[in-house]
Image 1 (cartoon, rainbow, N blue to C red):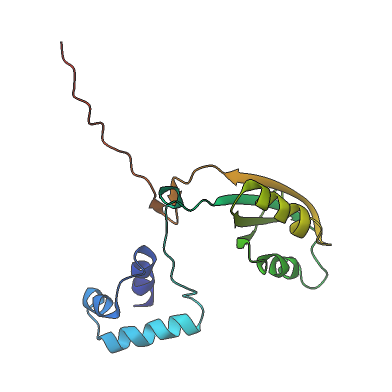
Image 2 (tube, rainbow, N blue to C red):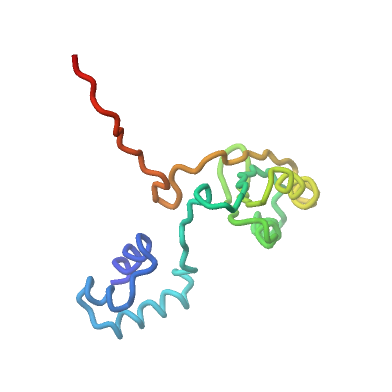
Amino acid sequence: MRQEILGILEQNCKVTVDDLATILENPKEDIAKELSKLEKEQIICGYHTIINWDKTDIHKVTALIEVKVTPQRGQGFDKIAERIYRFKEVTAVYLMSGGFDLTVIIEGKTMKEVALFVGQKLAPLESVLSTATHFVLKKYKDHGIILEKNKKDERMAVTP
């Protein structure tokens, strides 16, 4: 039942316990207990809404920052990752394989604000060896959701 609940919630976090009970053909008390367990075990860490900010009046800049760091003895990358994810500007931190160690995703109001974060907060950290900042110009798909579906061509066909 857990896997089914997680699969449904991943697609639609607004589904109610009643709806889950109906879909999974289980009593809603059992569903509620399982949801509570999933939250306590931090398997469900939160509920998220995907917003296409390009369609609002709110301007946001998202940047992906590649960070090379020196892992700390006995703690590896966890300590520096924790220090970085505690910044309020940071929305995600991932440990990576390959040419750099951490991917840090941040949001700001302007490119200058993002650049200042990198220059004044991220780059000066002791374990940070280098950074490379990439700005997101447009999001096509986020969290498995296509943000702007192709519009149908409504022009009339021209035939000879």
